[in-house]
Length: 133
Image 1 (cartoon, rainbow, N blue to C red):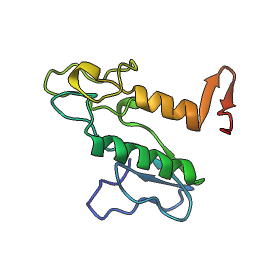
Image 2 (image 1 turned 45 degrees about the horizontal axis):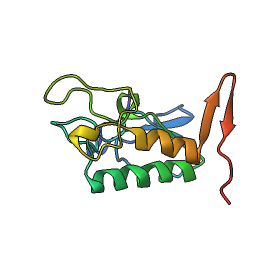
Image 3 (image 1 turned 120 degrees about the vertical axis):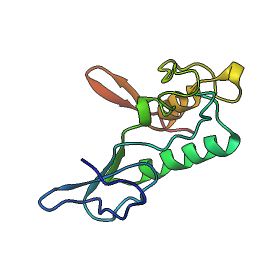
Image 4 (image 1 turned 90 degrees about the vertical axis):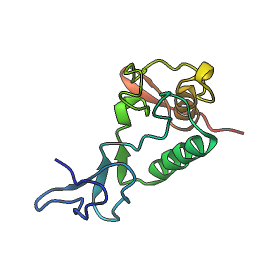
């Protein structure tokens, strides 16, 4: 159970040690916050195709969560694309392209951001990203 965006519902519940938010709700200053539904920023009719503004907003959003030690995000459909779209074929888990056109649809930009900024998961532990020189 979580609050609905733009309804004025508080993100915390009595007795809970954490907050639950969705989409673009602000991260509360107190407690650990978990965003359980990211905001769709690709085009509805062509899932995995992003405007320059949509890509910029995604990068800014990822940076916000990276810098906030008391917050985590569960990406929408686990791949930050819509879950249906006009053709009903989404979500697309494959990296695909960089999302700049229908011929280049995909979320490769996301995987590369995680690799470059967070690191990679190598069972059984996280391998941090290397510092850039």
